[in-house]
Amino acid sequence: MPLSEVPFSVVPSLPSRKVAAVTCNCLPPKTYGCNFSTRKVAAAFSVSRNLKFVANSASRDDNDATASVEFDDVSIPSDYSELLEQARKATDLALKDNKQLMEIEFPTSGLESVPGDGEGGIEMTESMQLIREFCNRLINPEKATRTRIFFPEASEVKFARESVFEGASFKLDYLTKPSFFEDFGFVEKVKMKDRVKPEDELFLAAYPYFNVNEMLVVEELYKEAVENTSRNLIIFNGELDRIRSGYYPPFFYPKLAALSQTLFPVMETVYYIHNFKGRNGGTLFRCYPGPWKVFRKVRNRYVCLHQQEAMPSLKEVALDILPSA
Image (cartoon, rainbow, N blue to C red; front, side):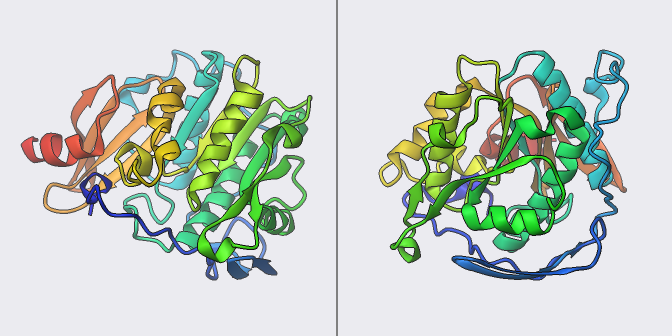
């Protein structure tokens, strides 16, 4: 069911935080044991995605993220390496345009997957791997120590340091930490002003969607450490469509619902892929600074059906644009 069709009165259940065994061709085979509080991990990374880690060099021509790239012609990537390069170029341009708050969102269970296709914990682990590769492409080595990546929980920072981010210079941090009532969905918020350091330049919030408090802490991070500064914040696979579409009823989650009026208007979605399945299936796509496009796959080739400057709602795409194409 598309997010936009979730009954408004339903209180959503949160995804399982358990992480299953995952494999990754971009890391040597190795088994890591870790207890993620609510999720127990015994992960042997082996995610197959034709993706290799590049050295932390952000190697690129200084002019490759300029007008020479015709972003109006950018289409759905063929693999995750192409996706990450598109996202890197889009983010580079947004940074040059002084965008402080940015969103990157795409499926991690496969380029044609939809929300719910993958198990929550596995998707988070895959996002962790993709974040490492994205940061390697985007950030120059001398700025790695001035980049702080916030994972949802402190236990995930430990896991990241021992696995995907082993040997990396990026600063790893967390948004929340477990509380005595964690089994009931409560976690202890972390004061962002105590986590941020004066030398920090770029923040990345990694998949802050499992617990509703995580995005509220991201908002706090933006207000206390980014707004009215020269810093930047990227929300990476935060599943913000849950909030946009009313998946969290405002009656039960007033602070979370308010983000649509407070935080989202100042945020630039620099890279975005959302798939729709069914008879009128398709893909909503955006690569900054290009327009929003709706594609449909026809004989193994993506055809653009519609484009516009403002982001359409998922409901509009599913019920109006795709059926009429």
